[in-house]
Length: 253
Image (cartoon, rainbow, N blue to C red; front, side, top):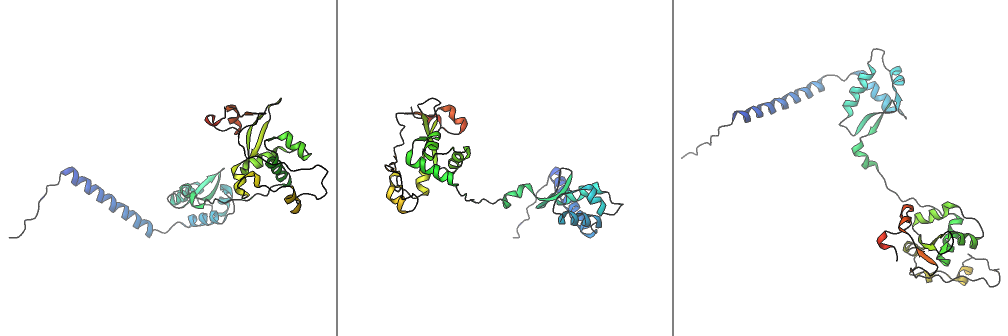
């Protein structure tokens, strides 16, 4: 026995919706077909070429001087802007000038992250060495050891590298900040501990110190102890505004 065809009654509203959707698809296809068949206005090609070849955004006066006199420049710019709106490159206006730019939602494609090495100045290297060997040490103490006034940016540079860190505040008038080296310092220079820093004879042998040193000159033995000394106070929560102190829950009592 032949199988009976399944019959289904389609509601009138569903039928109307399907008919409307089909009409919209057909209308869109017809519109696209007409657009493809119609030649693109020559003035849009000219405007597109001018903007594409320009090294900098162009104002409307400059664009208008290169186009035929009967061209409606504002309407042409609007049409070109609408044409490029869904593309990877958009026509945008910047300070009353026009230019092509990568679509904002695709800017991540052109983003490149790179590590740019910075060469430390001699002052920064000397400051780092003083902090490494004499920590905990204040800015004034670094200047006294080096014998010169240190520029404000020197400490900032070393802080940015992550090689030094603020430890606390010295218990003296003004309560200056004390500095020490960080774990990143040890990691960068391949040290297991601060005690692995070269001593006096090693520094002499490498040429980093003059062989004719004053009598009694010595290189201090740095300490790995992270605990504050008796002459240091912990950083205060208010120092967070300067980006110096650890979070409140980590501030030593």
